[in-house]
Image 1: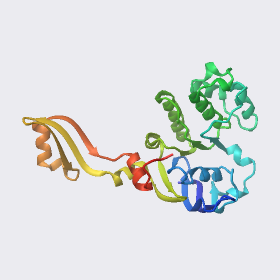
Image 2 (image 1 turned 180 degrees about the vertical axis):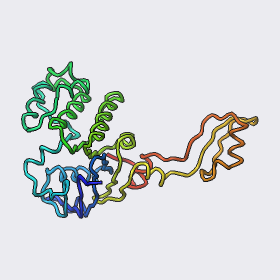
Image 3 (image 1 turned 60 degrees about the horizontal axis):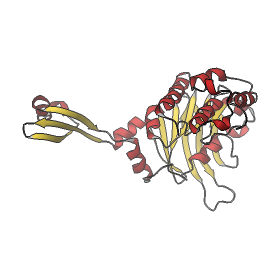
Length: 287
């Protein structure tokens, strides 16, 4: 599979910093996939994203964007990428429609932002000043702004943070549709549910280094317990029984429970992405 981004030995130190922020990081983002960069606060996620988006330049190492050295790109780079910052940046005295009209004018390629406003549920509020918008409305408008140039590569920082489940689902559905259309999406988020639903591959960053790169499915298989937990009601009352997953179809005790008890629930020993995050990064809290 072609690589949208290929990063080798990326190192970065802020001019006034005593310590290196990014320490020899290497990973790749495959074309047409959704890649998640995860890690605790201060791990270097935002710095890495800013470097890839050409907002920070003085780095060491090699970065290639669709096979070409990132340093060789000029303004044409921004025609190909969209960026959704975690903190929405808009002109609060202008309406949503005026904001989008202004920013769309900066690009050669222009998406249909009227259709996008409708899709995210902002059509009826398009002529309201953005300063009157709620946080969730600004998040949705910020998402539309990131799509104004119909980018082939999309950077999204906490794209659903602050949204109710219904509006979050709309944005996640749109992200999956963009992936199906061949676009590549790079996400940083602290919402592990979004990671499971969206990401094909994730990288965990800890203290400026990459500690793990894998798919959510592979991580859950690796860190989960290979067991089945059955809660049932037998003659003696309620009971909870744990069986090894291997050979479960031939486990007489397991089959006996299924045949003779009233089964209430059956669970696998699959772990959660939250638990994996803590195990991989050693952090109980994340940004």
